[in-house]
Image (cartoon, rainbow, N blue to C red; front, top):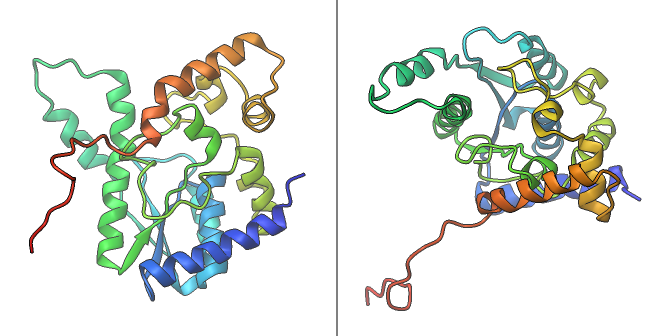
Length: 249
């Protein structure tokens, strides 16, 4: 049984400890998308640090149809926020792309979250901040996240929690249900996350926690995605010269 209240409280204490050790007096900076993950992370940070030490960053790429959800969270928590529209940077990079190199669809998809993270770190560095990672275990398990984009951050409250568990914590935090239960979508193709993945988060969460799954095709797809994306969760491989240290004595 998942005790959302206990896990929520434990996570709040963990965030407090992180800031005590890695940024006493610093602010938590959260890229706010209007979805459940960034909403839960922001709310956890408010409970841990107080609303005056949490900064939300809204990062539309041109016009964002659901940006009202981001503002709803900001108003609900009462936190300071900034808006940086990445459209000019996004279009600028696409326009400067080498003519002899084919621009893949996945490149265009991943460019936006990488620019968003660069902007989030710019806000963080200018406001005595530490950037919160907002990825959850379910997405990370199958690589549904962008390396050096939404996978980046200085601390990660949700990395060991499945989608279903994140939702339960959202309810424990008293967040608006429309943010917790909002159907996650990529914001580009009109498809939901589950459309893109080829299986439901309920199937994935159950498989992660119990090893049980009724759909053989879904199992094979999950296993394949997990295997080919495992490198994203590992430390960068490093060539070790000598004993791997720099002796300056």
